[in-house]
Structures are given as C-alpha cells and as structure tokens.
Length: 250
Ligand SMILES: NC(=O)c1ccc[n+]([C@@H]2O[C@H](COP(=O)([O-])OP(=O)(O)OC[C@H]3O[C@@H](n4cnc5c(N)ncnc54)[C@H](OP(=O)(O)O)[C@@H]3O)[C@@H](O)[C@H]2O)c1
Image 1 (cartoon, rainbow, N blue to C red):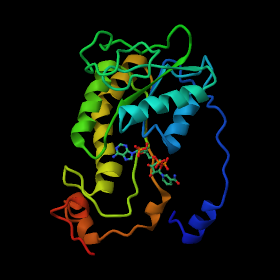
Image 2 (cartoon, rainbow, N blue to C red):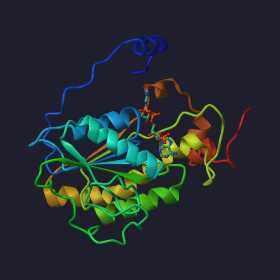
Image 3 (cartoon, rainbow, N blue to C red):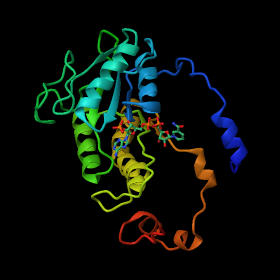
C-alpha cells in the first residue's frame, strides 16, 4: 500500500512502546546485528542480551565501524542486560576484557579457539555472550574480511539483522566508486547477506532450524519514484549510484 504524506507525518508524532521481551525460543542461537552501537541495532542487541534462560540466545554479535565503538557498545549492552549477558573479547577485533577471546591487537583468526565448533552452544553459566566485530560498509573488502572472520569464529548464524545505514545530506562517493548511501544501505548489506547465506544454510541443516534475515528499511521508499528507463536498462544500480555512470543533476 502506498504511504501517504499525511500518514508519514502522523506516524512521526505517534509514540510507540518497546516490545515485550521475546518469547521465541532462541536457545543456543547466534544473532548478528549490524550497526549495533546505536539506534535500532543497539536496542535490538539489548533486547536479545536481556532475555532469560531457557529462551535466551547463546550469542549476540554486533558490528561497529571501529573497535573502540564496539568495546563501548558491548559494555553498554551488558550493562543494560541486568546480569544476563557477558562481554566476550574478539581476537583482533574488539577487546573488552573479561571474555574468553584474545587480547587487543592480536591478529584475528590466528589464535587458538577461533576454529569450527566454537560458540554454537550456550555456556554453562547460561549468560548471553556479547561481542563486537569491525565492519565498514563503505568498503566491500571490509565486508568480505568481516564474513571470513565471522565464519572462522562461529559455525552458526541463526538471525541476521542488517540495521546499519546512513542518510547523508551531501553527495559523496566511496573508495569503491559508489554513491555512499547506495553502497552502505543497499549494496554492502546485500553482499554481506549473500556471503553469509552458506553459513545460515549450514546452520539450518545442522541444527534443523530456520535462520532469518532481517533488513531494516524505511517506509519513505513508498514515496520514491524511479526512472522507468533506468529500471529497464539492465544496469540500474550503475546508473543509479556509480560515480562514472550516474546522471548527476545539481
Ligand atoms: N530511526 C528511524 O526513524 C528510521 C526510520 C526509517 C528507517 N530506519 C532504518 O532503520 C535502521 C536503523 O536506523 P537507526 O535510526 O537506528 O540508525 P542510526 O541510529 O543512525 O545507526 C546507524 C548505524 O549504522 C552504522 N553505520 C553508518 N555508516 C556505516 C558504515 N559506513 N559502515 C558500517 N556501519 C555504519 C552507524 O555507525 P556509527 O555510529 O559509527 O555511525 C550506526 O551504528 C536503518 O537501516 C535505517 O535506514 C530508521
């Protein structure tokens, strides 16, 4: 249904309450949330990290643009989880201390304990493990490196929430040559999701479960109009958001 401007404005002034704690059985599951240091991603991480056993997931992995933001966010998530979660240090990613991983500055994937089989079940203390990993969506290489590291560390992924996004007010381009919003909000989340699908398929087969992919979006997309010629061109994204192919009207 097409969103009307009046509906959109009304929604902005409608207050919503936070959802009740999830009653889904997430036992032993691993949840990955991009953009977990703020906004919807952060609150979703707090929500899952605060779940009580026996329904709580084993692990919540958030992504941030820097290790420092990740460490700070993990501490806030664990602080909000009321004793139900514990921080885990990640080799070469984010060292928050007190976890089971390796120290800050060590190279990811080279240490012990990062192999297959680690982390697929809840720890004996029943607390949700919360960790942060670095992911920069303006850079396709970062997306690939993130997935490599994630798969080395975790053999299970049950829920992916792609929440990270930008809404810049000025036209800008990434080093990969794409308009920033296009790469951060569309192309990199798509690449991330596609690269993680094999891990989710293995999870589905091994644990007889149904992994879920959630992509945060905006209802404002109802108001967008797209050029039919571009849509039919067979190279829509190039014309829509690649620096050498865009028809930039200033
Ligand atoms: N809030 C709303 O009213 C609203 C409305 C419609 C749709 N949405 C959608 O809901 C999702 C979450 O929105 P939000 O308001 O919670 O967003 P937010 O508070 O602005 O948080 C965005 C997150 O994305 C991260 N991010 C930005 N650029 C990145 C990059 N290049 N690489 C990796 N991560 C990057 C940010 O990291 P830094 O902190 O480092 O910048 C932050 O963690 C988005 O997909 C948004 O489009 C939100």
